[in-house]
Image (tube, rainbow, N blue to C red):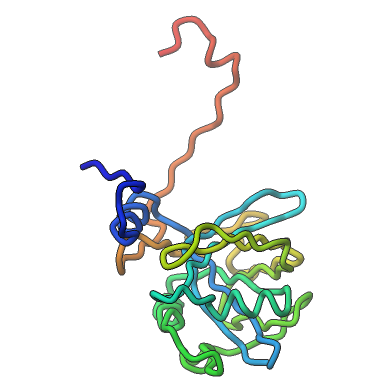
Length: 213
């Protein structure tokens, strides 16, 4: 199969292939608060770490619908400059999915999903009390990418505070077996961490060693 995006007038086939090939993707479950005080909660699977100094993460909302409107999450971050990213564990997957619904701006997804708000430490938007790990962030910048339906933006945030439930830890390491983070696949599919394996990063000396196979 071959697809050249520049030759396609429709972005959806490109989206379907990209999300099927770039996977599994971690999920940023983002809580924000509007200038009017309405709490919003929405998941985004275009999410990753940028760097550690300053500690920075990025998630990428697409514009909403054929009219390419800004999502409430984007509007709220533009207004307040703050947000919280929750890790989605397997036990919260169903409630996370409920918050993916496009609701009116005056409706809080916390209420729709039956989730509890809890005060954050460094930012105004609340966190999800049921989440086992979260990152409190302040906005670094918003970078628009593309125009119209199918386009979106990159939201970069500096991480101000990190908290993980103690029972999700194995000494000083996060236990994936306990945290059970989920990832997004294509379409409506998700996955858990079923298997892990490790490789030590090779040194230049090891790679140049005679007889290496």
